[in-house]
Length: 271
Image 1 (cartoon, rainbow, N blue to C red):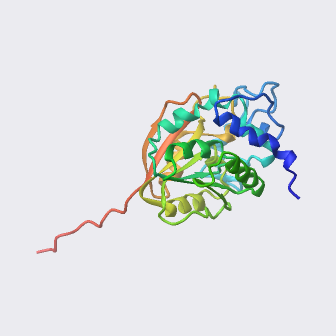
Image 2: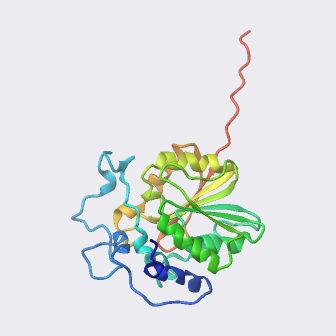
Image 3: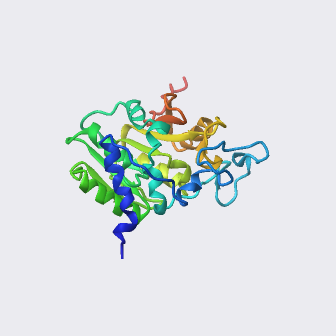
C-alpha cells in the first residue's frame, strides 16, 4: 500500500511555488547526485586523481562515450524541492529563456513531484497544457497529489511513462523540456525518437543540464553534461541545435528544434 506519510515532504513543493521556504536536509537517496566523499553536499565534482568518465569507451551503461547516470529514486524526492534549489538553479530565469506563451502545450519529461511543471502551468495558463511525465509510479503518485493541492489539474496531466515510451500524443507538443533528466535516460535513442514524434513541426526540445565543462559545479560527473556531448547525441536523432543560453549559474539551457525535412534537391536532366 502507498504510505502517504512517507512522502509527505514532497507536498511542500506547494510552499516553494507560493514563494515560501522550508527547512530540511538532503536525503541519503538524493546524495546520489553529489560527491559521497565530502561532508558538505556542495563540493567539487571531478578532482584530478579521478578518470574522466566521459572518455571511457562505450559498454553496457554507457552511451556515445558517457556514462548513463542512475535514475534518482523517488525516495530522494526532497532533493527536488530542497530549500537551496532556487538559488542554485534560478528556475524562473530558466523559464524566461524559453519564452513560453499562454496556450502552449508543454511536456515536462521526468517531472518528478512537479516542481517545474507547476511553474510552467502558471505561464501557459488555462488555455495551455502540461504533460508531466515520470517513469516511477511513486513519483507520479506524489505529482498527482501536488497537482490537486495546487488546483492545477485542469492544466497539468500526470503521465506514467516508460524508459522507451514517452506516452505523449503525436505531433501535439510545442516544447518538451527535461530538467536535469536527460543524462539519466537509460534508452536515449528511444527517448529522443519519442519526443520528436510528439513534437509539432518546429517544436522545441530543451535540455537543462549541469555543466560538465565547469569543475566548480558541485555535482557528480555522471550527472553533468557538456554542450558538445549533448549536441552530439541529440543532433544524431534529427534535431537542430538552436542555442545554448548561458544565464544560469550552474546549468546549460540547450535548445533544439524539430528540424523540418528538407525537400530533395531538383536536378536538371542531362542534355
